Picture 1 (cartoon, helix red, strand yellow):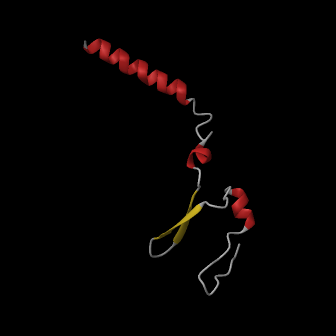
Picture 2: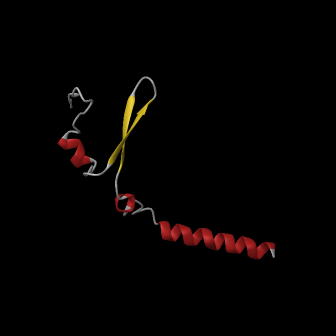
Picture 3: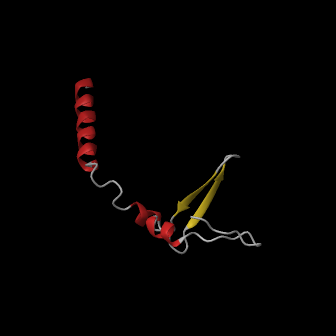
Length: 79
């Protein structure tokens, strides 16, 4: 995909990229320049909404409870 830079330094994020990455009005784009390449990072305006469901499938509650039980058992042995 290709876009053009205006004389005011503006460009357009192509619609296909906006759809694929769910970029909405109000989201911010952070530009990272390492001297050789430029990366654009999306910072969505509602970060909680953006992260909702991202841990699905990792069984995080089950893992947390298992870790808590292991800590409890470890403390019990030390007492």
